[in-house]
Image 1 (spheres, rainbow, N blue to C red):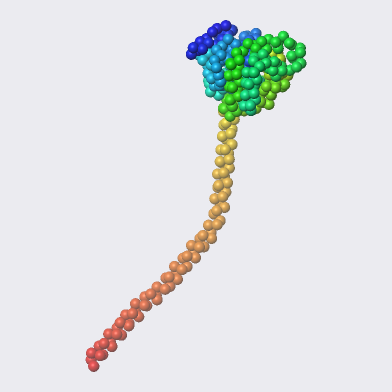
Image 2: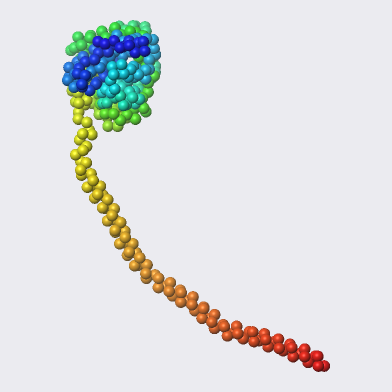
Length: 354
């Protein structure tokens, strides 16, 4: 265990595994602590340097008065990473931890690699639901919260068959500070990430419990459908699928987090790409040649209609000849005018003689 002080507040952090391996950060559900991930640690430690911590208000971390916000809880995770000198980690969160993961994928995407979001939702509608839960916790304390959580978090079949595992989780709930739990309830009540998560481009796996009463699988499916390329897996479990269906949960998470990068498979078709592009370019060239040929044919066809145009030109010349025929009349008119003028002179001369 490592106590990290951030801005005067203490956080309980546990770092495990080889420092040379990629980092994986685990974030626990509301009402639990970092030991909820114990079943997954052996398998995960083979591949990652694991960082798990008690969320604000839970376990041995600071439990100040709330209400908390998802943004504030996300900034706590970033501050822990900074304190440890870790630039980037993969993320795995369940319930509250998965919601914090959504916020990080939206607002600090460069700090997160792949993300497993288990028993998740982008919004849980109905503030009255959370206000009633807050009031019930105030009235009945964390023992009452634990009793109600057991029925929501595990199926009856699992509770009957594995009472010791259920009891271990209920002890976590019972020892959670009341005001920390109430403040975390307010964070979930006030959050709405439905539109924001559409901008996520990281690789994401959403795991849902088919019998989850707290966050039904439909809510997880909505998250997966809102994130481009996200994968969606449903397990035969309730809310705490990492405990109720430990084997399948762990396998799904490890397979996803350790799968080869999709970019590594892309170089294979690259040599063929230029040939395809060249072929694609030739096709338009042929079309262009075809267009030119059709254009030539079109120009040949246009020669025939030009003959009427010549007739029109000859028709225009005909009036010009008529104009030439009128020229003699044009010459005669001056003579007539001259004649009338001479006639006038003769008359005037006769008058003078008389």
